Amino acid sequence: MDFHDELKLTMHQYVKLIYKLAKNFPQDELYGVTSQIRRSAISIILNYIEGFARRKSDNCKVYRNFLEISYGSLKESKYLLFFSYEEKYIIEEEYKSALLLADKIGKMLWSLIK
Image (cartoon, rainbow, N blue to C red):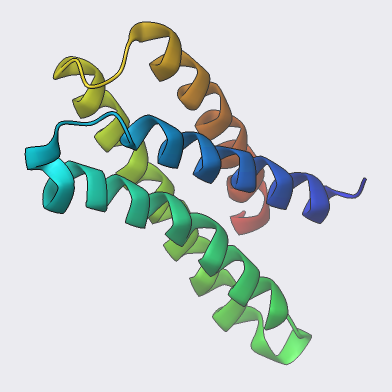
């Protein structure tokens, strides 16, 4: 598996985990944290895929911009994970599992941005 495929797979696993965890969030958070954490998580992979599709050498700035948006969405989702953990929407084990995936994605994205 090449770097691109590994990164996409890890992002996909992260999105699936976030969606699974968010199913148990309080109903009154449906349009708040639940919606926001799902949106930020899926934005990570969607922006990466779109940027990867535009990575031609003459479009290097466009590709990098999509990578940076993807990275920003990752940071947003990590904060929302922390918030969800503090509010006891998720347990410590779930938080740590999601954080491991998020950190792996962050390192891989950052290596492309640099």
